[in-house]
Image (cartoon, rainbow, N blue to C red):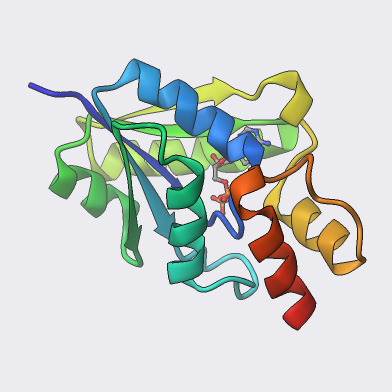
Length: 162
Ligand code: ADP
């Protein structure tokens, strides 16, 4: 049976740090579903779910076993419904750890057969987050080192419109 993994996140917007994790996951599983979610603990997103999915799709079009979806419900329900064996998350710094640990334990309780797998970030992406992109872009800085080249101009256009 094909092994399916889910990479969840807000992806507001997707960064090359996310793409690094998605690419590495695509080598470990037969199929990877990147799922754009609504994070109720974060302030409202800058980009709509459709825009966030479009940015991801355009950035991963070379990865044939990766698809993109949106879900605004419980992650554990989604992974079970998709028949996934794993949730893949990226770990940057120690501060990611506590929250990710809680989420992994909760998801294990809700979906016993699904493992959370952490891929440690490559060092060059340690500092990188969607917030960094939004902050730098809003102040007119260069975001070319932070986001995939295919979507850079559209991200900047949207940030400037706001
Ligand atoms: P969330 O809203 O859950 O924090 P994000 O969109 O910020 O979602 O991130 C989705 C996933 O990607 C998380 O597992 C996060 O730890 C990981 N991630 C984000 N940025 C990086 C990065 N620079 N390197 C590695 N993993 C990252």
